[in-house]
Image (tube, rainbow, N blue to C red; front, side, top):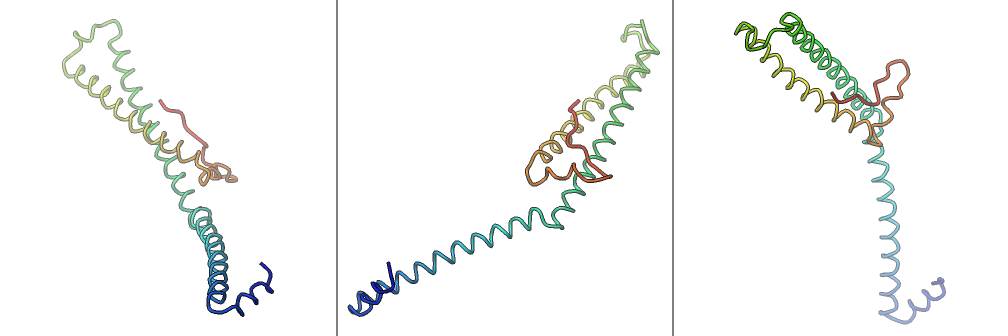
Length: 153
């Protein structure tokens, strides 16, 4: 609607004036709504990709990668201890092993299952986080990279 038509409405009396005022308020509200959406988008971008958020996410990846490495070392250690029992008693039925050796062997196998479960849970969370759009950049750091993903055991 051109300004001339608005001017005619204003001259037509109360109803015309009310129409022009409502139209103006609606236009200003629409512009405000659009601008607030832009501001909110900028705020979300800052919260997700800003320096503080980036540092926090990068530190999470570094901590998780270190935890996964430690858990993997624990798995390797337990597997070596189990293999040592198996090689010490190669050819001997487990029912013929000394009772305390059998108990320790079974305890190690049970603990290994738990350690693998914790490892797999940590790896699954790490891998899920690394596929998110707002986290995907953290495996591209120069010199101090964190892996994109780990394999489940």
